[in-house]
Image 1: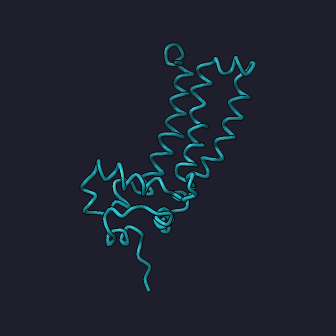
Image 2: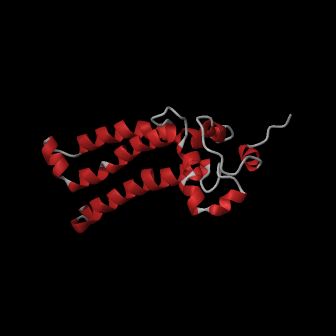
Image 3: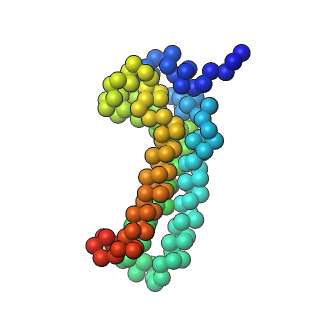
Length: 157
């Protein structure tokens, strides 16, 4: 039998079914490897970038934390850790629970049109979640801090 992709399977389902522990893995079945695993790469970025920050910024621990640039850069590793627990496995042990939970709750309130499509893939899709999180956090946060380093002055705070 021909395999049906996740989006097509979602369209025949109840539009706003309560997410379960199986919903996230169901969404990831047909996802590209990077879309299904970027959050674990993020988990690896966390300790690596944290170590680099504490090597790059000189001085005592107190002096490092008094530096607004270091504190700003800390958003990158801390948010990378957050991405792993939000999109990898949550505190219940559910794999990829954020997207179905968001779509069922907040997403259904913000986008009632999704009732006609499927709240499993509307408004957030697996791919969209990857792009939002990598472009905004990995690239956006980092570029913001590079600009703060270059411009200095009020951009440091």
